[in-house]
Length: 119
Image (cartoon, rainbow, N blue to C red; front, side, top):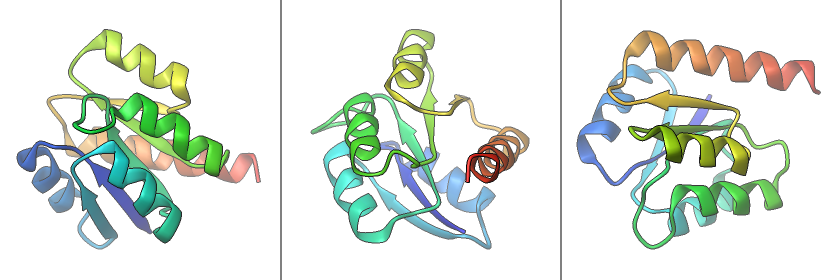
């Protein structure tokens, strides 16, 4: 599975890279490059932080969903208000900080099942 991880926090990207070992992981640090990479690579799942430089994750989520309404985006946030905005923008689920391996895997499975049920 190809996974795009968008977070400006190196530690979060490293944690997700370790949890997602065995998957193809693409990383970036801002919303603007996330949109560009999504168009080029078409990942199966995107983990998108809500608060990012150059373009926030909420705007990037909306732009990706304009490109591909079937994009599977999981928002990452430490702030419940930003989480609500991510869901409103179209994220299918939220991964709250601090991140746990079990939650990452649970959300990936949920998003993949949702994808299959809508195919």
